[in-house]
Length: 299
Image 1 (cartoon, rainbow, N blue to C red):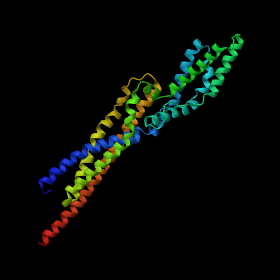
Image 2: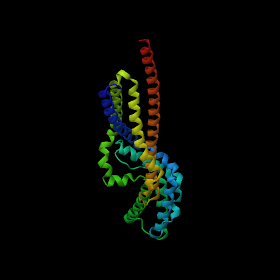
Image 3: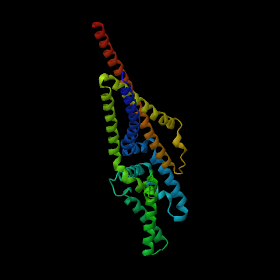
Image 4: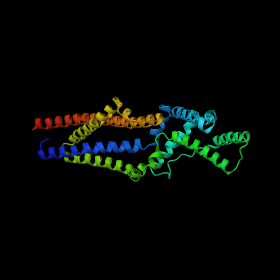
């Protein structure tokens, strides 16, 4: 590289490309992985979330048996892992759709008609055996019992606690900005592409140097992203989170590790592309140098 101005401009735009590439990667992972429902849905089976929720509910219903008088066995068929998994999936799907502004509420609406029928039947039999009149107080007690049971199941199945976060106002604070995540990611990718074109333009007299500077920026950006991502995965850093509920801990930490792994994989691809660019630079630079040597020899 003969001109100092070309070198300085290349260095400047390479530094810009490093930071823009890192931001584009982070934004891309956030939009196309973190906000993607499938990322969370895969965790349902890999972390056996339905079984974890079932275990919690069985414990809760056994503990309240002495106070409500309703045997825990009444709920057994309705809180099996097979029955709970669709509710968990619906809760996750609705929650992420709510984050993206596609639904008006994060709540799931499963069919509890069978559970309601069993509760009504048990309470009705109990009332008849105890000569309890089926008046307004009776109807209110039945409705309260059904609502309490359904709420308990829905809360346990909301493994990412979308309802709690929404009630606390957390989702409301970030939700207005999430629809811009896609535009932000595409904008940063476009900005990186423009910087690449500028680097090739700056080095138009020796175009292969555009591959060198682009590869350098991509390699540095990828390494800077990979180091903390690999460290987080290898040290299981997210396991330090203090979450009492087993299924929520498993869901949240696994989700965070999935996104961290996505950053690592993106960095690996970036390194591979940068190596390819260095190879292209070496080949093209060698060809150009050979041609220049031949010309010099003729003169």
